[in-house]
Length: 381
Image 1 (cartoon, rainbow, N blue to C red):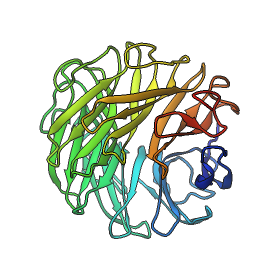
Image 2: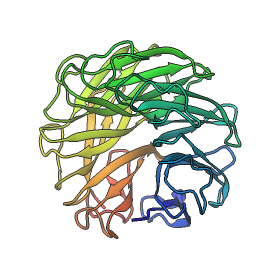
Image 3: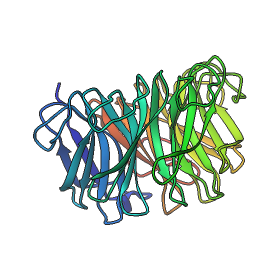
């Protein structure tokens, strides 16, 4: 079945206590095959940069190298394409994260299975692939990172000194990986301004799978990442069983300051994390548990929003969703000190008023995690 990339722009000023967000514009982008969007960021000119995956080579897409390519699309403030680039080789690539850089260009991270075309020096299997583009989308440099086993990059950010931090997970014990704790580890790589490795660090336990899906810079010059852990040893303390959300605070050198395993006996995963105005942290993901740290679970998977203090103490948590699958993917703090969260829902009940099948679902919460507006049924709405 053909899938196209769909971009929505919401009128965020109406995402207030009593109003529903309204669509300002929407765009479907792609070709006759399949496209998936993984990340979108607003750019300095008021437009947007979108990254994901394409198997097309027609319509809005040109230059496909074969298999599936990264697709990087720059659109203006009303959603019109300014330029697009397909990046990759003859195998498969997926872009997961993009950030605009200090010089007006872009840093993109994901993974590659290729070793030709735009990709060079693959270590074997899937590698982290990090690409620096200029403001027109032309490649300035690219770097494959990893070892002989699968390595997946999910998040990249530029630091204040112009270097880059990349987060994901690795199951390799060789190549660029200097330490493997066991099985699959969270793997962080610090790159300089031209993509050379400054340091790499692994985090996790011995027998379980540990993964990072987002990383952010913190005000003290360190980092915060969110993901999941299946470990109960090594760097992981307080594991509840099965998969837990895992939030880890690091200093500027990547040394662990504190960590929190959050969840219950079911399967729980952290996706997005942000530092808050009180220097604490807010995370969104999903909860498949009805015990432990989780209350209010409605069935299957729910959005799970967690507020932590600056030292990682749990302050409050909220579940949002219905009886089907609801996955929270991204969170930001709003100007009124509340939170906007977005992800995917398949529910047609509970907090979800209208569903077309599998929908993007955006929810506005106040500063204490209670919902705002008319898009949900409970928590004081």
